[in-house]
Image (cartoon, rainbow, N blue to C red; front, side, top):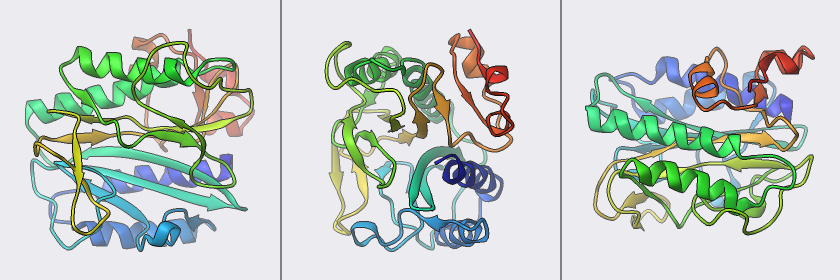
Length: 268
């Protein structure tokens, strides 16, 4: 899983570099597939449930499962990129929301709070924690900033399949639900709307949008459940210190894990 996660982490960094005004999401999709194959991995999404693409590309009011297309990204867009890779039959899964050019302060706040919600959830992960505690962490942080949490789509277990039990909602009550066990792997993925939490699916039967056409953002990491949660999809070159220090988290991930220096990334 760490190998699959490393591919995903590198791909996140690559897409962040090329996801600029003027590029269309079909080109992003093709570049992502080529990148994954060059790493000796396979795209995790392509072919699953009949899906035809390597990434999901969800602009603005799209929540998840947006289909890559020829529309060029424009200054002021936000876009959620959801993607995964398989190495030796093991999956890793992650998502980021990119800010395209100069975006509005409202959009910037949504993206910031959504990513913070993910880190709040990661900070709650440890063996024995119930999944309601994770969902509560996301919901409390998002709603305290005036945003809403999507109900219809949730996080999940991951390993030798992309979507494994348990389902991990981004809402709920603390100390309820299934307990996480040491050694499990989970994909935590808050989807947060600027307006109401309701969604609808477009006629293409894939693309999910906000019912009220408000903006939506999405972040995700694959995490190993250990005493110090290990983020296997740590984005290449990304400095997460702002979140780790602000929320006083104990997490691990990135290149230092591969080098056997896991404790150097643990904080708190």
